[in-house]
Image 1 (tube, rainbow, N blue to C red):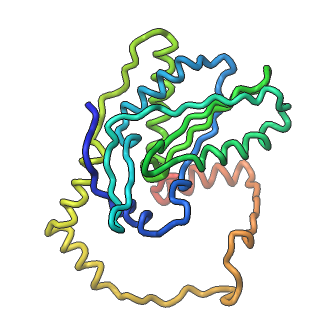
Image 2: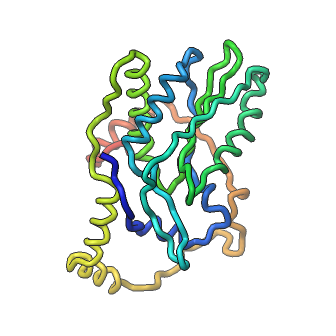
Image 3: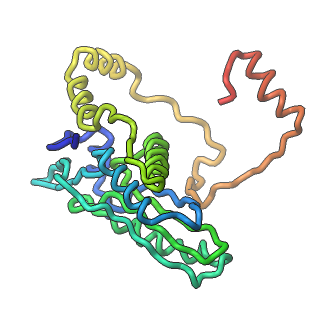
Length: 250
């Protein structure tokens, strides 16, 4: 069933909301997917609705009350799927045309009133792959979540397109239950003992040596170097080195 009620903020959520970001609604993750030209919009809408019903975090909303952020589930919601036509855009100019529209939809999320996610289908000219943009606020999604959500969306879409009942895997532990567990563990003796251990470690460490201690450290100063390894060296790194040190390639 649908999870209801207030949800305690997890530590990482509290850290983000306390950062006083100028536009907190814009802090999102997005996927721009290539989908078949014959994608059925009705089946996609049904699949999107099923995924939102499956994952209760999509109904979370955030309010600032007396300088304290509160998180709770909205009772109901309307899925926000939008269709935009880019039929007149030539294929070589599609990326440039989609970028401002993607930025627009990424800025359209609302922490208090919703939505926290949008699905935007960009219908393109014949012969040009159709694009599907999925935007979700980072408060409720991470890298692990995407693998689950994309799999659920594809499964639900295939079932809907085949006129089958949409059946997604059983729900697992809710985000609300996980948050409550974190807060309970925070008050436990185990947490107190581990905290004491870390607090006894030296608070200051020697600074790492720098080639240019007065230099800038900005993203625009980043340099990129590309190297190509031979087949023999690649095989040594992949197999012989890992075997010698009993490690994985990662």
